[in-house]
Length: 427
Image 1: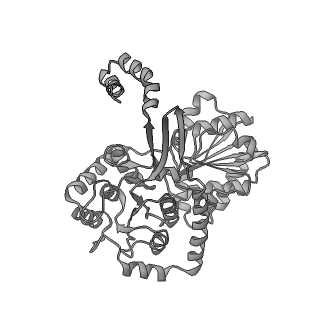
Image 2: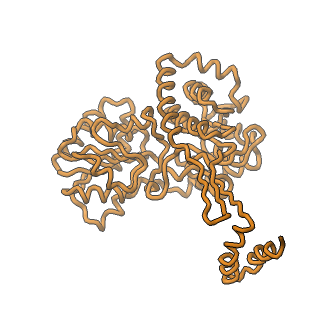
Image 3: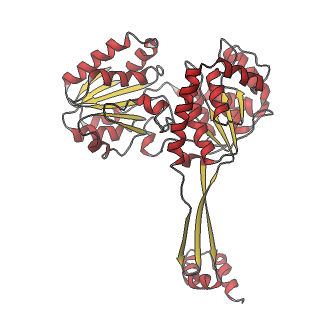
């Protein structure tokens, strides 16, 4: 990690930059994949699986026999943990149900708003270096709570087994996913966006992924299909002061660094001595990690920054807008109340980021790369649309007529005014 002492505000924009590869070749590759899937459908998915992963796929959809086999392979301990996490996630998202809004804004003018679920959602579950079956819970549980009728899930198969991880299939079945398909990467996103002979076209795509998945979502989002949010590699920021335990902070930093080489971790603290102590603890814990090579690469573009006063540390945290923000400081809620940009905030020394990743109940699908300044993480509203209704009586329309026609004529839209006036000429 790079140690930086009290950098001036003029340097903050540079220090908030995320690691980025040259995206031009990735974009070109993804565009080619999208076009193949759009024009060739299932055949493109089979060909790409063989070309990219070396895996021939006989069938794309997971069969009942494969679900049964997967359930038998998952340990009872993991099943119990999935059940407990699901209960917490379900409870928190059920509490987010929006109430209908009904109001008479003027005599005889009744306005109403209600939430309706998105009809068919696509869930992408990464495979890569680790099968993220916890993401099945984070995406499928709120979709079911929202009442979405169809949940389509895509996930890559293992290069060693040629199957989707059994924990992913078990979690999908438990959470009520409608259909599961063996497809990963940009081609999976394309399949759910365009539809193929086997994979239905969905209304909105959810889920994290590597740079190919992210690029595919960005290229298709808003044009071909809705997406949950812009997102990139995982990241965490820890705010720490002299009250923090260096071993706790180091463990939190490493919990994100082990995600992959393009992850970024940021330490913001109040003294150089504390920063160096935490960095030493990071090195000590790193040596014992099975994924130490990936974490080491992530740490190579990560930073430790020292600011002497709390206000500046908080201001920098808001400028960075971290996916995960951990507060290991005295009076943490005072700092939390000043946070205006973060995906999810973990308050106090006993709130590790891994609690939110798995089982506390909040959602771990969060905006990265500074998008937390404008986007929320996945929540129940992500799966709902709000429809408004209005009903006017004749008296209600008469009461609004002058306002409507004056505004319409001022905008030069005489047909709008006529739609009111023609009604008022009739009993």
